[in-house]
Image 1 (cartoon, rainbow, N blue to C red):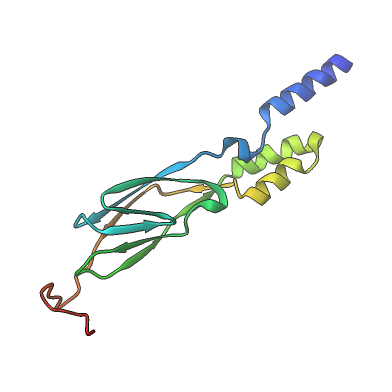
Image 2 (tube, helix red, strand yellow; image 1 turned 45 degrees about the horizontal axis):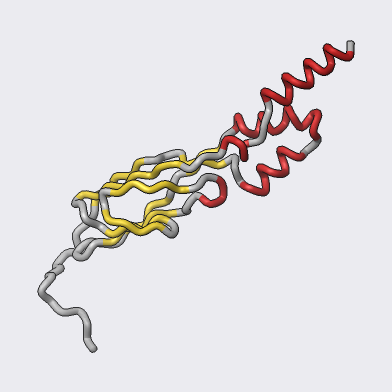
Length: 138
C-alpha cells in the first residue's frame, strides 16, 4: 500500500510543475513596408526588418512603437496569450504541495506568453511631407 502511494506521489510530482519552469524567452519579428523604420520594443531599439528576444510573463513588452521620417508614427499592441495548460499543471501538484506552484506563477506572471510573434506594418506617408523643408524653428 505504501509503495503504491509513493508511486502515485512520484508520478504526480514528475508530471506536474509550475509554468516558471517552462517559461522561455520568445522571438518577436517586426517588418515594415517600407523597410528602415525605427522600432522600440520595450527596452530594445532596432531598425526594420528586425527580430528580438523578449522575456515571457509580466516582462513581455506591452507595445511596439514604429517611427520613420516622412511617415506617421504607429504603436502596435503586443498580443499575449494565457497558458491554460500551465494553470492545470499548477493545480494538480497543488493537491500535494499546497498552493505553492499557483502562487509562484501568479507572482511571476509566467502563465503569459507572446501569442503573435510576427508583425508586419504598412507605414502611412504624411501627406505634403517634404524632406527638404526645415521643421526646426530655433
